[in-house]
Image (cartoon, rainbow, N blue to C red; front, side, top):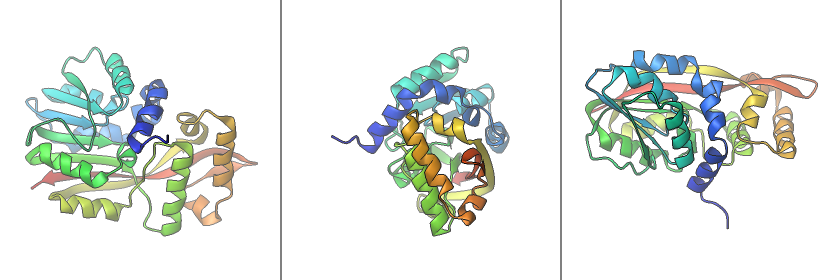
Length: 256
């Protein structure tokens, strides 16, 4: 029997839990460092970190707020994050689905979700849940890989992501996210797009260890049109890919 989208997420993140804690892409990055500066954090605030993964967001906001609730669909991943952050006493760990959060309405002052939403089976339902658990006037910070508006570039990156990570659902276009955010009564307060350069082999190996399948990914990328390679800043020589540039969107919203 084929695994559902959520079961695939749990499988991939269980198998690669240590890699995500150690991943420089997740543990560092200008977007991660910017989070406390984008949010107006207060020592009495409660913050929800959705799909915490290696716990990197929870770690960086922990000194600024009273409580952090770090949730993740994958228990093994959450346990690894908790082990990594055992010295921080104000972080609570809860196994939870981003599309069905186990919290009362109007509970949190802030909600953050970083580099995770492209795994969600229903981004719209996720946003509805964020809006529900967030207090009126509260802030929601979303950071995720996005697909360009161009259909060919969109198709390429989502096909590539699915090849390297079976738990990938879809990187949405910015216009799709903006539409959903408006639907659930969020107002965009601040946003920033950037190109995120990733070491290709490290990015590939994090979710794909089979050498034959890795070769399929290499062939898929190297067989792409020049315009696609240029957009994604694919640095390659003699069949070796050194790095790739993904599009990332960081957007701060306020609940009406």
